[in-house]
Image 1 (cartoon, rainbow, N blue to C red):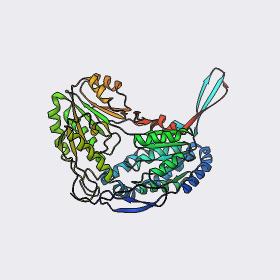
Image 2 (cartoon, rainbow, N blue to C red):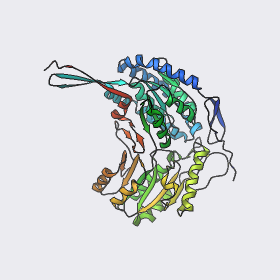
Image 3 (cartoon, rainbow, N blue to C red):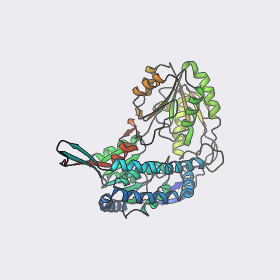
Image 4 (cartoon, rainbow, N blue to C red):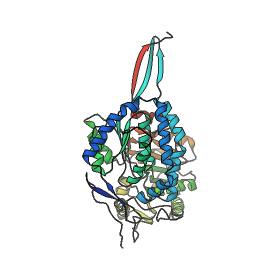
Length: 471
């Protein structure tokens, strides 16, 4: 077996790093790392810029942000091509990422108006006006799996609230991050949004700099490190972390619908989704039939370059990420799991991996205990009781999302109420109505994003009380 996929070594605090196309192993561009001196100057400019930005009327800020969003959307063709080249997802998925963000703009702006508008409360002779003050400078540290939507989910509410933002995009999609920063900077006052480039060392330096809040989406381990670094200055935090999300298929479930959810949401984006289905628990009496349905569906999930027509999965974002997933699959099979499909590294260039199905995943395997972030459908049997589902769900420390398939609606509601997860889908993959927050329960997050409650985490509430004129 031969591979020629390039790997990226450790990224320091100076010099450059290669932006690598994971489908070809070629370097797209050498990216200049923001030096510690430059980073300090950038944060100082942000500190100088945010008071005037925060003092603007909310509608003034939103008008400028709308122009920035229009500017970014006008770059759609370039953005989509870069998303494919930098992190590998199929072009149709990249286009969907951009379009989904753009379609939700109006509802997002309406949420900002509700989240940040003053509220007046009267009580006897008191009149209290509750304001939402910006925190100051927000460090937005973004992941690579959705290189447009995830940075935007941090940047937009922070800016709408009146903060300045220093954006550090992932080293796996630095040029997408550059487009975001450029489009916003073109329509906002100088210093209100700025860009830094680099790897983990630059992210750590940004956390330790003179910022007031850190918004981070990424791994639990990095989230813990950020919390430790931020503790000394009592910096505010919003951390969206990982998941090990279960799907429960009870004996009375619609097996076709459940199998489609299990396969689609284990494999989409090459499994590189924080809320991917990573544990599929199937009632013992229907397990064999369910496995057959999963295998039939998984066979359609072809891999290849994201620019190739009809491809459902692009490469892993990196050779390191592929190696981690393959090691988990190998460990599970060595400990007694049944490999039903995939599970081997293809020959040739590119960080590709086939759709993989493993049944009877051993509980002591890393495929069961660690976040996978790869295209693996992991199947388990269980006795089909609600109590067992609750216990199995909570064997993982994560609590991002869960899915339940059963025709007994009362049982589904009972189970959903007992599960300590932020999002739960019943007879469908998780989805939320507009305005709902995106919550990582337990070890899947600290704070949360989205919806009025999530937007307000980029502010401090302030109460101003005078005499009620109607008393």
